[in-house]
Every structure is written in C-alpha cells, then in structure tokens.
Image (cartoon, rainbow, N blue to C red):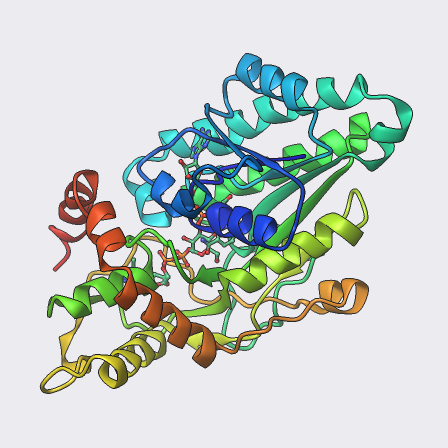
Length: 352
Ligand code: NAD
Ligand code: DAU
C-alpha cells in the first residue's frame, strides 16, 4: 500500500480518487482534517476496503510511527500542509507548525521506518514531497521561467515555510540517504478546491451575484494546471523519478488574474446565462501584501525525462471545473458554512 498525507484536501483527495480509479494499491490516508480537509471529497470511496482513513497530525511523530509500522507502505506521498497564502499573512504560526515542524516530524518517522526495512524494500521505498513553485519567488514579465536550479527566494510566510520543508527533505536525502523526491508545481484548479482560492471563490461569488474581488491591478501572472494533470505527474514521478531529484510541474498556461476571472465569467455565461453577464461583477480591491508578480514553470525536465505533459488545456480544464461546481452546489454549500464565513469577513471585510 501507499501512505498519503493530506488526502482529504483538494489535491490529495483528487490524487487518492484517481489513484484508486486507476487500479493503484490500497491507500492509507492520513489527514488532520483542518478547515481545508473534507471527508465529503472521498464519499465515493465509502465501503471501499482499498481506502483506509486515519485522522492524525503529521506533527505527531509517535502517531506517524505507529501508522507506518502498522501499514508498512512502500511509498509516502506528502500533500499535508497549510496551503493558502492569504491565511499565512493573517496567521503564519500554523504554517511554521505544519509545513516545517510537521514535515520534520514526518521525515523523522519515515527515516526510522525506512532504516528498519529489509534491503529490497529499502531500495524501492519513496518519500515524495509535494511542493510549490512559490518557493522560487517572483519573476518579472521578461524573466525566464523557474527551472529546478532557480535559487529559492520565497516571499510569503506560506512559501517560506514550504521552502524550509523542501530544504529538510533535501537534507534527509543527502545526509541519511532517505529516498526522497520533491515536486514543485504551479497553481492547480479543479474539483474539490476549497473556495478561498481564486478559481472556486470567483465561481461561487459569481453564482450568487456577489462582487468578484480582484487584488491590486489584476495583472499578476500565474501558471494554471488542471488538478488531474498534476496527479498524473505525481504518479509518473513516483514510478519513474530519480531519488534526490526535484521535478518542476506546470501547465504551460500563463495567464493574468484578470484574464482568468474573465474566462470564468464567460464560461459561466455560456453554461448558466445571467442577464448582463458576469464580467460586470469584477471589483478591484486592496492588494495582497507582498503579492508576487509572476510565476512561470519550465517543465522540460519532467517532460523529457518522464514523458509527462498536461492533457487539459486551460480552456478545457476550466470548462470541466465550472461544470463540476455547477453540478456540485451541495458540496460548495457545505464547505461555505461555518468557519468559511469568518475567513471571508477577515480577508475581505477591511479591503477597500
Ligand atoms: P489543501 O489546503 O486543500 O489541503 C491540505 C490538506 O492537508 C487538508 O486536508 C488538511 O486537513 C491537511 N492538513 C493540514 N495540516 C495537517 C497536519 N498537520 N497533519 C495532517 N494533515 C494536515 O491543500 P492543496 O491545495 O490540496 O495542496 C496540497 C499540497 O500541494 C500542499 O503541500 C501545497 O503546498 C501543494 N501545492 C498546492 C498547489 C495548489 O495550487 N493548490 C500547487 C502546488 C503545490
Ligand atoms: O503557485 C502554486 C500555489 O498556488 C500553491 O502553492 C498554493 O497552495 C495555492 O494556494 C496557489 O497560491 P496563489 O496565491 O497563487 O493562489 P490563490 O488562488 O490564492 O490566488 C491566485 C491569484 O489570484 C493570486 O495572484 C492572488 C489573486 N487573488 C486571489 C484571491 C483569493 C485575487 O485577485 N483575489 C482573490 O480573492
């Protein structure tokens, strides 16, 4: 079996669903169930013996050691993290705790587990660390895209905490020989994304006729990747990637935020027409402090070395995504109750 951390979150749950749909081995799914973790994402696996869910904190080393000893996974895919930049600005402590200390505890548990394995299993064990392009910092419009050798220059508490976790993973390979691989990916979108992130937030607001809050001038650039393509890349890296290596993963789809919001408005207009359209809901609000201007990914290594390329274009992926949110209004309503309301007040209440 394999062990997945953070498998009740956005990318982790997509990964678990795709992995099992593709006939992968059983999964033990370890998640603390923070505000971002949602077992409803995994509802289709109810009663499926191939999926075992364990509620635990990656920072609880004893719990992680016990889970590893009980299940003896052949690989660990580490998604668990605090993942939202705006939340890291309001409260960096949790990011340090989970992303840095939590990853350290998990590495310690994995190291003990791996060192005790028989040689043949030791050889094939993998610790795959899922990270972000944000560790490389911000690009100007003319800079070349981030490659695996771009120096780290994280700018937010979130990206700094992920950078620290990347360094720890690297050190555990270099010092102890733990067979780690790190992936650094660009912005994902798709089903089950918590509606605090740009794409699902804009869809949810638009459907209620609420303002679409674009930070600053809306000209910041991100590279967008459909989540299913990210999950496929991770499967390929796990199967064929070289230990100790880093792989950048991107969608080859650089867009300005305003272009993304307009694309969402136009897709919604085609599928659920609104009198006057949705674009008029766009509202410029105060910028994110320290807002990175541009991210771009050079994905040549994963393409040439492992043969991965994204299947979805931005247009096809956004179409699928908007349709999913229209078809899953109950999921959206459930995640937007409770804590979500406090977050919206906190993040948007004082933005002018
Ligand atoms: P998410 O916030 O949707 O999910 C994170 C999951 O981790 C949740 O289920 C949460 O309950 C769990 N978790 C948090 N703290 C935990 C802890 N201490 N112990 C156990 N579980 C804990 O995040 P996501 O968008 O799915 O991102 C997953 C990973 O991918 C993260 O490491 C993130 O940095 C990375 N990443 C995300 C993107 C993106 O665009 N979303 C892009 C590149 C990389
Ligand atoms: O690049 C990979 C990263 O992408 C991941 O590591 C993070 O986990 C993930 O959250 C994402 O980070 P971003 O900060 O790029 O994503 P977010 O959806 O929060 O914002 C995307 C862009 O849209 C960013 O430039 C800020 C802007 N934005 C966001 C929100 C929520 C707005 O203009 N308005 C908003 O209300």
